[in-house]
Amino acid sequence: QVQLQESGPGLVKPSQTLSLTCTVSGGSITTNYIYWSWIRQPPGKGLEWMGAIAYTGSTYYNPSLKSQTSISRDTSKNQFTLQLSSVTPEDTAVYYCAGRYYRGSYSPSNIRYEYPYWGRGTQVTVSS
Image (cartoon, rainbow, N blue to C red):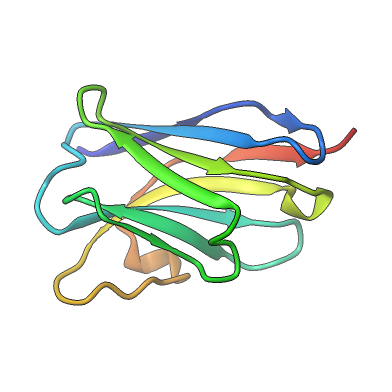
């Protein structure tokens, strides 16, 4: 059974860089055709796909966040990491890591049921 667990600080100051790690167990982040995403949900709003890293190591980003976002992985630890720079209070949200199978030219999704694998989510608050 594939399980995901987010880890990182719960409180970040404005202008700092938020860094979160997702540890995957029960499966490999290099398994063919699995794309590992970061998705967030601000209070009172819907899910927002932020970016993904493929089983190949290729990365994909939400154009609206691309300048702030970096996703990387450590295959030896079976982890992938989100870095979000220059955060503001508007980046306050529950952050999730998630995985799904995809073949062909990658297309992101905000739809929960399209991801069979989810972490529990971690609350991140941006405040001074």
